[in-house]
Image (cartoon, rainbow, N blue to C red; front, side):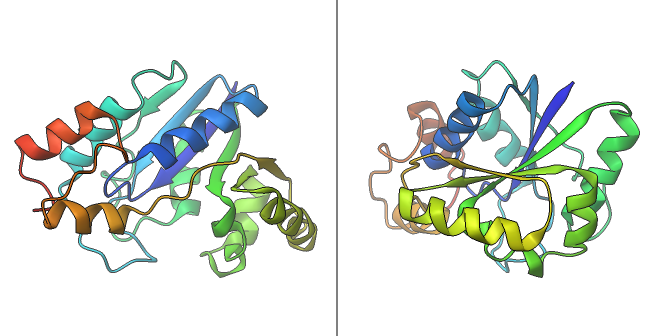
Length: 194
């Protein structure tokens, strides 16, 4: 089985994440996508809302995507959530499956800074979603330098920022254009990010 791994802080999840995954699924025949919220981000100092809230928001946001499955595998791990550790843990569960790590195109440009990035490239394919045609050409060139099994897709995803959404919520501004209405309702109900 071909399994996508789509991880991140998702603090909060937004339409950019949903559109990115939809574009990947339009380009790759993945049978399942594990959406994995980070427990402790190794790259960001941002305070994350409780894992259970992020997991619930993800289940709301991705309910329309049949292949999507929310995974709490990183919640069970100790320490920072390094991608290679997550992949190794998943390989113990899905012993004969192929993995495709789904990332935004901007993340590919910093991939050499990821913890044990060469091991990641040895363990799975990487799918990088470019936001526009200029970025696509740049990522194609850069992916050849990494010397791994890397697919770059032209996703034409609208660039959104979770930090901007958090700021807007804290200032009591409308964020209905940034995420599904049910997510907005859940955030208001539980007074998240305010």
